[in-house]
Image (cartoon, rainbow, N blue to C red; front, side, top):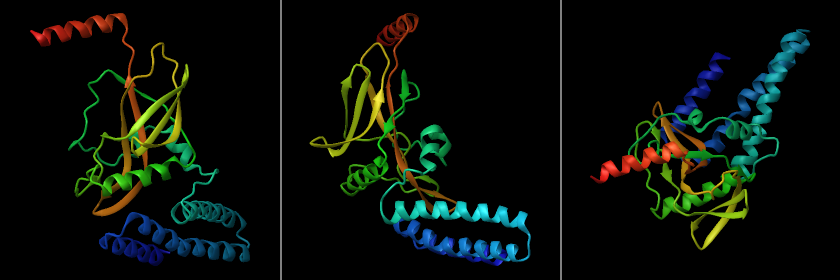
Length: 250
């Protein structure tokens, strides 16, 4: 087993040195994952032959989990589809964006921490990440999105604005988010439920994920988006804000 892990680690480093496109690199990893999966199946078979049913059960569970993720990867990296039973999409929606960040970059980014904003939840369409990835590749090829060469961290800087988007109000508390590679062609990718008293006022749609480098190895995290809007001020906050503005004008 140790020899197998060392071999896989060696292949992983070799592919990393070649600087292969993340799409084909992930395809290669998906095919390589057949080796440890088949090896675990062999272990399960041997344990059942030796009547070690408890260990065989645990290894069988591990084998089924590996097969599950292998099937997900086949659909995603080879067929460009997301499976409805993809549990990873649940984690993406539930966990905050900060969980998925490896490093924090500030070069060429927009500072939003000091603004009076709040992040709103977007109910994305099932395959929105495929649409987003396709649009981003087009924008990058046209130099409308700049990548930063890094030794570690994400190649798309943190808090980079998505350039072409529009939020269309469908009802009093419902909005549709559309993105594209220009304002003439926009694709709906999700909806926003907004219960605020005022109309939703977007501050920016920001890109997260993409290619990143860690320990001199390039990885790829699915692209995602986060939307910040203006937060409604309380009466006290509004007075404080006006006073601060007047002091700056003096």
